[in-house]
Amino acid sequence: MYRFLLSRQWVILTLVGLVLIPVMVKLGFWQLHRHQNRVAHNDLIAQSLDAPAVPVGKLTAPGRAVSRDDTWRTVRATGSYDPRHEVVIRQRTGPDEQSIGYFVVTPLLLADDRAVLVNRGWIPAGGDLTKFPEVPPAPRGEVTVTGRLKADETTASSGIKDKKGLPDRQVMLIDSGRLAKVLDRDVLGGYIELTGSSPKGKGQPEPVPAPDHSSIGAHMAYAIQWWLFAAGVPAGWIVLVRRERRDRAAAASADRATGPGAGAGGPDPREDPAGPAARDSGAAADRTSAPAGAPAPSPAADQVLSEK
Image (cartoon, rainbow, N blue to C red; front, side):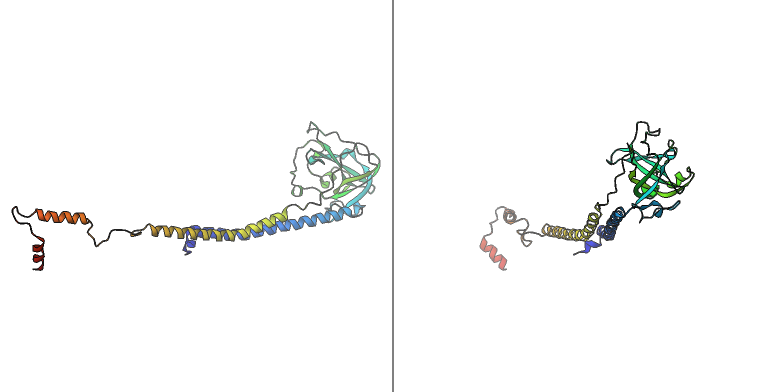
């Protein structure tokens, strides 16, 4: 009844289904873990943003990477800007998430002979990308800044390729280690994403928006979809098997109905194939073959002869 399952086609189909089921289940758990990581990341950002501001020197140091737990923490620093070593970060999206321009990064010289990088905000790109853009000047004199502590950018973490041969004072990544090489003092690891300044100054770059920590994405929906697909594989296999069995049974019934000897009303093998007309014509031929003038045999004579 189900011997067709041993055919090459059905063996391959069954093996493919057996492989797809665990793969889809694993993909579902992968999306579930991404959902859980996204929720944990959002919670960490919310806690960091809500934490009170602390001196930047408590969370980072020269040559020290900003830890994941300290990222997005609100920090403050007091010093004076160094516009001579100011750089712009190319190909950055503006607050509208569509316009392309620059981040303006200016070193802030601290009182302890150290420095920290401050991302003062975003400016639109000018017409000539080979020249240093027109940047709003940083406030002069002593300033106190507050902002979100961020880790140094790398190609691996940001997905941005670090290009070489760029115009002077234009870079692709915010890297405290690189700028420390041109400054005559130590630079704290990471940088401050500016949210407030006293004094503020006029005509400053547009502040970088706070990170979105409310969206959880569609990872959970994707996980459920993968698990539904995994459950659908055996269900689909059963449907196909039943359909194949039904089609084969219908084909076999049709073959029996149209085979040799099928149907009623066929000729009786005991009868002469030639039929009654041929027998009558044969008897007539026997009578006409008698010699001329000989009396025709009567039925009674035929009966006597048969009895003898």
